Amino acid sequence: MQLYAGLALYGASSALVVRSGLGLDPWDVFHQGVARHAGVSIGTVSVCVGALVLLLWWPLRQRPGLGTVSNVFLVGLTLDATMRLVPRAHGLAAEAALLTAGIVLNGAATGLYISAAFGTGPRDGLMTGLHLRTGRSIRLVRTGIEVTVLVAGFLLGGTVGVGTVAYALLIGPLAQFFLRFFALPAHRPGRTVARGEAAAADTTGPASEAGPAVDPGAVRPAAECG
Image 1 (cartoon, rainbow, N blue to C red):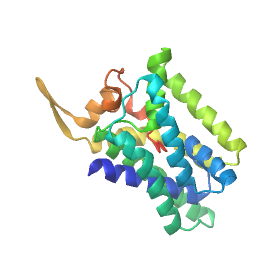
Image 2: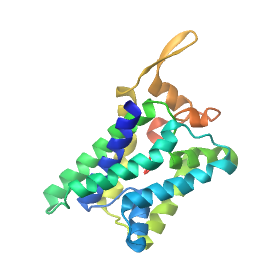
Image 3: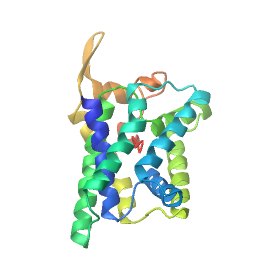
């Protein structure tokens, strides 16, 4: 229940950020840019890109979990559904309100779905897989991926603005807070830990059990979508 609530909320919160018109996170900048040229919805592009990224897990020897496969489909579907329900904001106050709500709820969604410990989303798995295969730091790999998709999305016509900067600055602290807030108990020999803590220590889930510890604030789910 926590996994699917988190993924659905992730898609819905991403739609609020899109409707604010003030700028998107790097992956959604890319999704929106592709959608404008392909003539399809941003949610459809999110699903297709997620599936293509998941194919890259094979050479990187990453193992998808239930949360990984569910992330590919559910985030894009709920993003499109929310876009149909929520109109475009008009006026700076309404735009700022939608952006703020979208970013905060996105952080909550991240905490919900990662704490459930059913595996990372496809984009975060790409990041951890490249980290393990190349030996480069998580921060360097993550930055390289997100700068690449941001520039590509901008060139394709995706929206870059103050929302892009706000998301980049706030999503890490928000995700870290909600990871602890929604943590589920999990038993290990000799002690009891929170599943959110266990997920972070295992690179956010069973999809990367052999991976090194990752700061949960440095991991963005998708859209993963998150």
